Image (cartoon, rainbow, N blue to C red; front, side, top):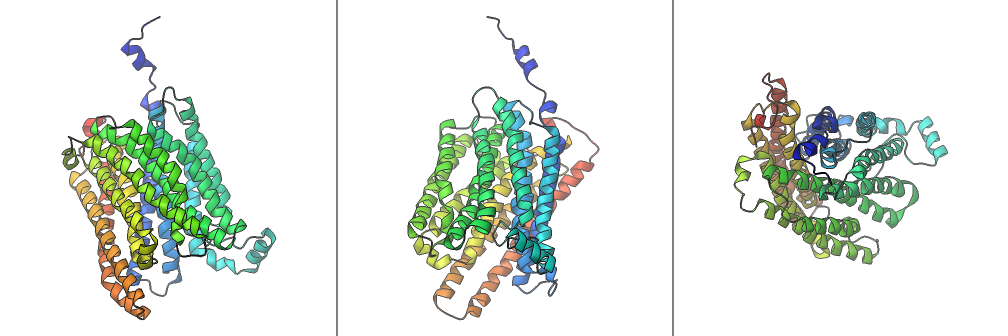
Length: 491
């Protein structure tokens, strides 16, 4: 037997430049930030309409109905999907020590995904102008479909009919591109790769289920049940495994210590896999959907909170004894603040899915506040944390301004929490207004102070976003090139 020296082992490890396409990672981040900016502007436009400050009143293209769909789709498919794809192109090759299946395929996936997001936006904005044309109606009849150019009538599934096959092909190619290096990896797989492998399978199946079955196969309560599963599984089986996988990868690197319990991380994985797919029908409580399905959704939703607790305990155990780093290390602060928000929103979810609580908060702004805390307060903050860590390394320059990084964090963290509290209270007030059987206009008048507060909370979040974008631009323009970790001023 021949002993292997340390230098031999080092020699056999591929170079970072041969594994990671840093240019593509940066492209994904820039595309994600572009769509996030558009989404935030759309959200502000809708909020201004609620408080009668709409600067585009009477212009059809700026109607709330259109921009509400732009807002949600730009977040889900424009921002989150692009940002997580960027993290995958950095993390998977580094964990497997294998490059992705194809560099050319990687660039094709990037371009194809931007086409899908832009095509969805175009269908939402201009599709209704063509839907009533004779040639469009004739084509729809021939193809036995109800909609060809406009958005589909499904929340988060508004992508038009003709882009769905392209999106499914793109998701299949994404899975192939990353499963190849994972299959070639030697030794046991780290838990991050477990989450990623599951996400590749779950996302494809979730998108196909939600965009095809309710639109073309099912109807009535069956379509409603599947729609509920799609809405929630898009969060739990697409966003959540990619977010948790990112946390399990980056937090030990930032803290320079291993994850507290690898076994507990696998408990969280299998708990997510078992309970989360059963939750979606809790969006349709008190409907004609059979009650045993509604009860099952309530029980599984509450069970997931225990699964989330295992993840939170794992990361608290990892930072235990070194909590002061939160004050000095901005990426760590992003991740752990998002984790606290995640525990809050999941605890809130366990309350709001009970049938008793649903009587009060159903269809109220409580649900809107809950959605903003989980999508912006959790996953967006985790992505911001990873971008804050990685962008200086991609640009080979230190951050232009640590103060702007601080402004970005505090405007985002405080803004989204104020919005969450504001909308939670608004939902409770609205529920009591409706329960008292007062005229509908009374609840609208009572909601105005909360909606005004939401305007300023949203503006604070947008100011933080602008600080981040400006910081990236100025960092890019810096002439002092300082490669390596010593260039990073925020860690």
